[in-house]
Length: 135
Image (cartoon, rainbow, N blue to C red; front, side):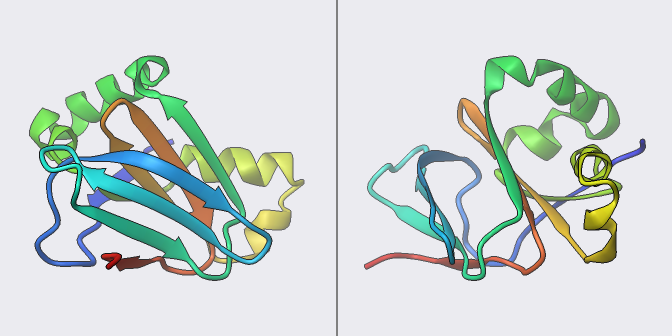
C-alpha cells in the first residue's frame, strides 16, 4: 500500500509541534487537547463533533518503522516539525475495512494522524475536525 501523507493546515498560525494532553471520547464527540511544545500554556482543541469511528494512540518508540518510511519518502523536515496530517491510501483504513468485512468501504472516511511529541494518534472519522483555541 502506497500511503500519501499531506500536512493538514486547516488553521493558520499553528505551532510546528504539539504534545497531546488528553483524549476525550464520549458517545457523541471526540476531543483532543494539545499544547504547544515550546509554550505549554498555549493549547488548542481538535473536536470531532460527530465522534470518530476508530482511533489508536501509540508511543513514538513503537512507531519507528513508520517514521522511517516517512523519512525515506518525504524527509524528516516534512513530518519532524509538524503535527497535523491526513493520510490517503491508508493502511489503517485498509485494516479497518478487512476487520469489518468491508462494512467501512460503504462510507467515506478520512484518516487523520497527529504526530505529537512522544506519541502518535491516528483517527478515522467520516467528518472533518474543528480546531479551536480554548479561552
